Image (cartoon, one colour):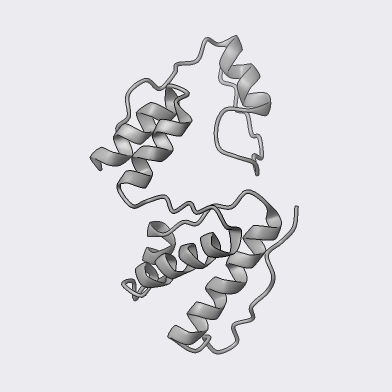
Length: 140
């Protein structure tokens, strides 16, 4: 017998919803070894994260210059956008840039601020493509 389960997951990745129930019922396997991240810093941070040592994982990323956290929100957002714009400039292909760059924020409000800032930085870098329309981020 073959059972196919389709579950639309628009939230964070991982086993959830009906997949969690099926995983439990069939005694699903648990990923215990990381094969995807090849970078040593990323492998170490992921190992710490999976061991529930979130603070040390973030410190590992920060020590490698991959997390930028400041005390003041405005200064933090400005720093994030500066780093993003510098790294974005190295990518001439939009698809590569999307695969290589990520900014995270705690609220939709901050996401919107980062989107506006990134769009402004992109506008300074090059004009919009013909017919391109910039829309605000979708709210959930």
